[in-house]
Length: 263
Image (cartoon, rainbow, N blue to C red; front, side, top):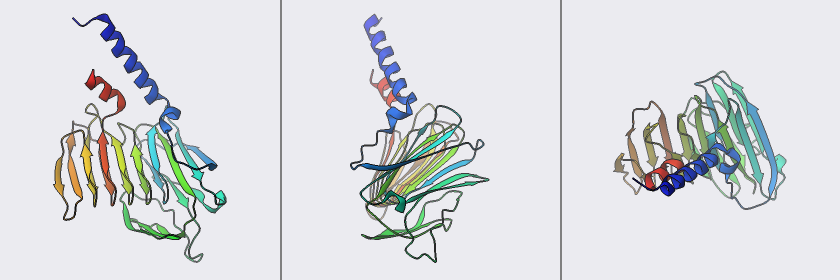
């Protein structure tokens, strides 16, 4: 029989890990350089099964579990330009809520369209030093003028909601184990937690990068050096749809599950 010390060690590690998971502030971990210019917060509630959607252009999108039934979205602007140049638009609709970082319009006669979607990634996404052209599969988006401001989103999501996170120049990560997740980036990485206990059906594609998974998936290479991975982990109806053009995709076990495996 293992000594009592080993049981105590296991209990301490498990409690410490649970505390880290349960504390959203501890898990935010935004280590982006530059002074914070402005922080915008939005709280709200939508019925179970509906969608929380965040569309970004320059910056990260991170999703993590909420402690209660309320959605919390934090948008942190960093850079030297006037933070008022980038608006945070919230569109509440019958299917959920859509939130966008809206940069100045390149053509005032054709304003940026923060349009709710039912899923899908980018139809067009290109950037230069001063402009970005962004269209989503549903036709939303527009042509905008870029500044040095970046916006990093943290989204805290209750159970029984679906999540879509999109960004052009930045990373998308989701640290939830029960919600359906779509994560789309053009230039950045995508990182999503996956547990053997809750499982998921996975569709992951990197056009020019790689897909790494701590679970067995069916993998094939694209004509370039990209990869497409798919498969089912466990018996969950949860779905993960992940895509990046130039970055990598990582499917990883949550911290507590990894510690339990190593002990």
